[in-house]
Image (cartoon, rainbow, N blue to C red; front, side, top):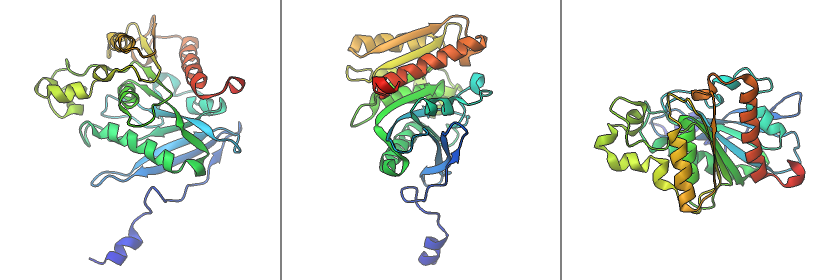
Length: 289
């Protein structure tokens, strides 16, 4: 095998690969798609999309969004059923509010078991920090925002990140306890085994285990009629965080099933607006909110 040939045919490493040109929206929001952030041996390249505010002369705080899909499926740029028809979309709206938004791939349970997806999100933050000057972002001011399975991973990222704490976490209907799930469930597929047979791993993968006083502020939002991830997951995590001395705001939404199914459009807008305000309150100075 010719090592020189391998150098020629290999794509540039994510840490040095050139950034693509941005697509500029009519609002001035800039969108960069399919930025490789990590290469994992034997796996697909991991990529993220980035939405940047119109102002190119400033350094912008960051929202890292984590998609749902039972850890088994899903797309990095999908915030869920009820936002898919929005124009402008939810990430462009966040960028218009002054926040950079990164939406990242992570390895799914059919590709690698836990903790692979959590490791991937940490790698995304590492890459965003490395390339921050080129991108005009400040990952030192980051709110993580996730929905469903992505809410579970976002909670873990916020609670277990080594080094500086995140500025906050917005968690939409995320699982917080994986220990009680049965064989064949999405939780078992994530863990690679029946949770009852890998109790220690299930606890390590459960946000409830990691609540502590120095946790960043949490906003936990959950439909009261959620039949896929019962609202008790958010209620228990909010209580555990409060017991530890951390800031946790719990909002259970009447009339809503999972992914805000059954909720009128205007109330879905209210959930999004209130969640965005939670993020901007923690990332932007008062004069820019």
